[in-house]
Image (tube, rainbow, N blue to C red):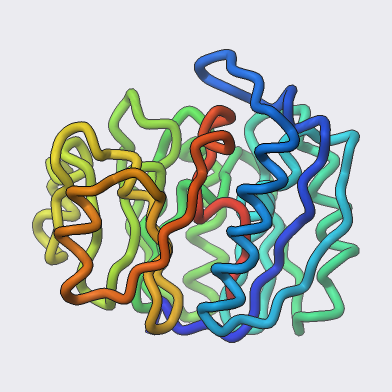
Length: 255
């Protein structure tokens, strides 16, 4: 199952996150970030995962978002290529921090690809082309994943969505939670059961299914009503973290 996990890798928040990449040029409050992150870690724990907590990296403002520079599949960690040059140094650091946990370390050579653009649903990877992931990076990642036994589809992320997973997430092995814009993608419509969120609640689409729990961004009442009958919801507040274009999925690596 694409939502069955035992472990998570999470990095402690850094003060420099106030200067993280933001499409809206916002600067979050560090103390509020720490509080939101604390509840996020608590929710991951509640979902049954053992957590490896990495040290803060003040030199890299966006380093709390560990999903972007690395991808875990089976017993392998694939070191990705974040788009922004300010994040390049994160690759070598996270490689050293987590290499002892996995059998193999593989690398993307050429192009850009970030974990926020990679959706794994039942050993099938959907890679979204976006402002952060280009065709060369997606093709190179695809080759690695196929060698490891996965199947891959490369799709175009709608232009005004930062990452593919900004507005979609896995609910179960054939169901994806989507925003109105993501619901229009032909590949998703043709291959999966889609649960479409109401307009105005797109932020809830970056949910996080972990075992029998569904972590859902707090403050989206219609989404909660839609999903609460079938899923065991843990609400997690990420309003401050969202100021640097982030959500639930990007703050951990689950395996």
